[in-house]
Length: 92
Image 1 (tube, rainbow, N blue to C red):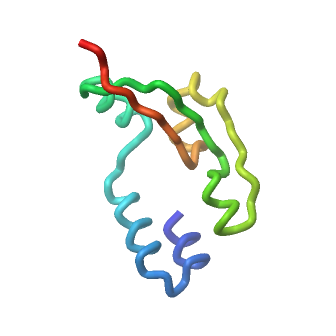
Image 2: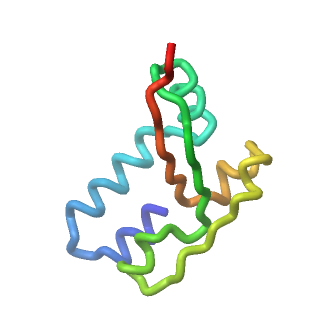
């Protein structure tokens, strides 16, 4: 991933720095779900992408959803390149 970003975004230091931060955070989709469950929020809507919508603007690639990956936690960590969630505050 880093090599890809460094090649495609050559000279764009903010994008390269962000990519390095994302990789170094080591946040997984499962870890994100765990953090949300223990917070005051709940997920109201979620979409999984193999090709994220932002790639259409950057690289001309059409977004590709892979919603069925939500049922395969182990596989989604490797094949999902973007997760878009809408969170709502839990009513307690």
